[in-house]
Image (cartoon, rainbow, N blue to C red; front, side, top):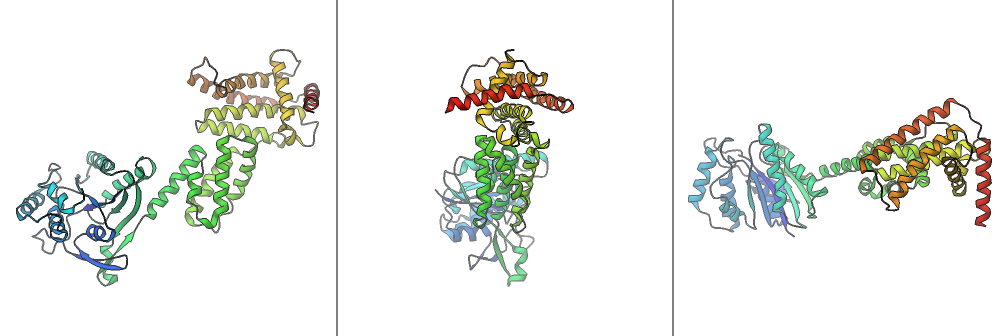
Length: 454
């Protein structure tokens, strides 16, 4: 593990317009004041940096880097002839020059610790922007596992820090090297007049925290996982993070009964944000509100449970969680049938539709309908055929059985089944059916199952 500083190098502010000589400046950092040509030198010394990755164009002040680090660091002897070579070449270089400067190894040796000189273009067109982006993303190869990374964005073109932000996001979210982003710094040279000609070095790591929140929001909206957001919530809002973690646990289990309770909790949570930090106010109500509106039951009170489960199926399909979508759809069909046959015979329809034995009895009825062993109403036959076709796929997937259909065919069947469900809802809503015969059969079977259990 090493402390690594990524910094940028510009052309500087010259004491004399005819000479390429950096002005020194006083910087305040960690309650001390230091004077140097570069913020990177202040950070290098103050933070105990092991090696530096210095990024600049071929026209940047590489000769000044060589002079300052060779003179002050005593890591390598200063060679005036090499300094002249670097000075002459860099002074003449333009954006059209090849990405090469004299004696890069001498500059790296002067900085010490296995440091690296990295050359980039100005980034004035799409090709140069793409080239710079690839160069800076490639800096990951210069980092080792568990390195502690610091970034200085003070010097050079203002566009270059945008490239390195992509690298930092990659390192935090994708790279397997477990690299810690320990600090992002900016030397505020433009603020010197207000601070006795001393430029404060400010820490900007909170920028990445905002990015983490955005990443967490995407994870919630795309996958229903609120773990990332929950991990970012300050400790004083523990009840909020606990609610989000519990929801994610249950959502990932596809626990449909418990998920309905979580839906109600999330609806309440989205409205309890007045005293939250602004970033929480901006993220949590938006993503939670979008989720709850998507899965909210919108049909009559008799079908709010099946409607919720069906909405979960559609939501899971939209997240490409196909098995979860299939499971939710299978259960939504059974729930819908429970509600249809029992809604005129009970005052507690929601509880009965969630009762395992009553659901088992309903499944037995649907199975009998499919095999023409039980007389039935047309609408229930349609539901039975739909249920059996999707339940067969679900059972084969869950029990690791062979399926003749290719994956894309299974997914297409799922999409078609959801369309069929919608059509049956519309058909059922336009006509009135007498479910007495079906209810009597199911209720008798339900009582038989209860007796067998005893």
